[in-house]
Every structure is written in structure tokens, then in C-alpha cells.
Image: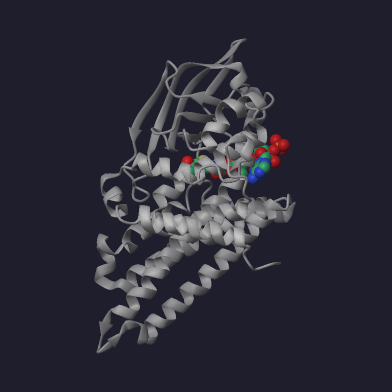
Length: 379
Ligand code: CAA
């Protein structure tokens, strides 16, 4: 295994770091407070190629590999996990899903604009009663001949308000259970498509999370993705890659909190010397560094496995499971290293601790990752 990053990868890392440090950092606390993401920043992320990183240039993307994507995700997540979840959903769930399984017409009509960041996408699988148990879809899409009639509710949808295009999973043939599920491209503004309340969240507060409601929404037949009944496979397959993105987000949150802790430990003095000279703090810094490095190796391995065209279900689940636990542990320790200052907003680490929690929940909880890993082991 080659542990060195290529010049191309290092350039992506530098570009993402510059953007995060120069454009995202200054207002990140304000955005967390107001729960609003600045559309100017979204536009810049699109212009820099961060919203369609793995999409082929012919469809408006940057044509990069998964490793480049996780490297960029890590740098952006070090500063602003609200920005990186929007980026992750657009890249790995929406763009990747469309490029892999969409028709040529769907790619020309939607993917080119999504990959360029001209519009943002959302991925709508979760429902009030279908979170971990994703096959229990209550949203229905009844085949009406030339269109499908969509009815139901989707919950906790990232980019719920700002997205122009939603990939919606719905049940068409309940008697076939998960094999009767379809995936649809649903445009905002269709009659009967309503945006529900915005969630008031613990973390990633500047990201835009909403309930979406569909009441007799007419979805054109040509907007179904792939063949009839492929929707659940579409969702699962897309989420395998999504989990690599969220693992990279978790890694970035942990690495960001560690960098702040390292810096702070050299500046803060107690008992007449910097706290970095106390063994209690040194042990924390060492443990943080080891866990982050181990998480990075798992995330890079998952990305490389995907880039090599091999099965990456297990690698992605392992990376997400481990990196999200590391994010939670490291950010909690980062608050401890910062002491009282860590408990207030100005020093960033309290936000990072709140942001870290969601990485153990979305795109498959840690418990679901363990289930996925066990099934792969026992195959
Ligand atoms: N990759 C590919 N295919 C998969 C798969 C995977 N990871 N997991 C399951 N499948 C396939 C199975 O092979 C099976 O296919 P066949 O019909 O050919 O047999 C089919 O899907 C059904 O699978 P199971 O029989 O294993 O179904 P299950 O109900 O026992 O378990 C589950 C399924 C793994 C628990 C699944 O429901 C799951 O992953 N749940 C978590 C859902 C999730 O991750 N939600 C995230 C919401 S999206 C989000 O958070 C986005 C955001 O905004 C940030």
C-alpha cells in the first residue's frame, strides 16, 4: 500500500485547506448561531469544483478519484462540518448515484448542473418510521401510466430547503417488499411538493435539514432511476460511497479539534508552564494523534478500495464506524484540554463536539455499520 499522496492529491489538499481557512473559518460561529449557510459560500464551493469532485468532466465534474474527495472533505470538515455535509450529500449520494445509475438524458438534464454546483441535490430515504429500517418505506409512488403519483413524508433531509433536485425513494409494489421500491428524481416546485419545518439541531446547525412532504406529486416516468424495483439497491449502493464521505467528515472534525488542542496546549499556562508540558495533557494529545492516524488509514483504504473498483461495502462501514467514534472521543477530549474555554463557543471545540455526534447517526448509525460489517464477515 502506498502511503504517499501524489502531487495532485497534495494540490487538492492545499486548495481545500485554503478555502476552509480563508473563506469558511471567519463566520463559522456566526453560522452555527444563526443556523444559516451563506449561499455565496455554496457558489464558491461549486466554482472550486468541490461539489462534483468525482463526476467526469463531460458531465461538469472535476473527474477526480475518491481519495481526492476524502482529502478535500477532511480539510473542509476541520473547519465547518455544516459545509462538508452539504458537500458530501451532493457528491456521494446525489452526483455519484446519478452518474452511476442515471440515464444519459437524466445526466444531461440534472447531473451537469449538480456537478458544477449550479444547483444542489438532496437524498430522501429516511421517513418518520424508516430510519435504520430503510426497507419500511411508507412513501408510495403509484404507476399511473405516463407518470408516478408520489405521496408521503421524508424526514431529516440534508439540503432540504436549498436543493433544487431531490432523489426520492418510494414504494411502488408493496407486495414485493424492498424489491418493489423505486428511486425518482423529483424537482422542487412540482405541485404538491411542500417543504416542512427546519430541524433545530444539536450540531451541524448551519446545514439545512428539513421534512419534505409529497401530496399527489406527479413525477414523470422518465425521472425514475434505472429499472422498475431498483430503488432500494440504488439507495444501498449509493450509501456505501456516502459512508466514505461521512467517515472523511468525522476524520476532519477530529483532526480539526486536535490541531486546535495542540496549539492551545502550547499557549495556555498552568502551574507556571504551558499545559503541553504536563504529562496529563501529553497523554491526551498522543492518544488523539494515534486514533486520528488510524481513522485516516481506514478512510484512505476505503477510498482506494473504491477507486480500484473492488467491493468496498465493508471498508466503507469500518471507516465510518471507527472515524465517527474517534470524532466523538477526540472532540470530547479537546473540550477537556481547553478546560473552561472549551465550554464556550469562541474556541470552536464545543461546536465540533456537537457536530461530531451526527457522524455516529446519519448515513447508517454505528449499530447499522456493525450489522453491515458482520454480514460481510459472515458471507
Ligand atoms: N450495499 C448493497 N446492497 C445492499 C446493502 C449494501 N450495503 N445492504 C443491503 N443490500 C441489499 C441486500 O443485498 C438485499 O438485496 P437482495 O434483494 O438482492 O437480497 C437488499 O439490499 C435488502 O437487504 P437486507 O435483506 O439485508 O435488508 P434488511 O432490512 O435486513 O437490512 C439495512 C438493510 C442494511 C439495515 C439497511 O436498511 C440500511 O443500511 N439501513 C440504514 C439506512 C441508512 O443508512 N440511512 C441513512 C439515511 S440517508 C442520510 O442520512 C443522508 C443525509 O442526509 C446525510
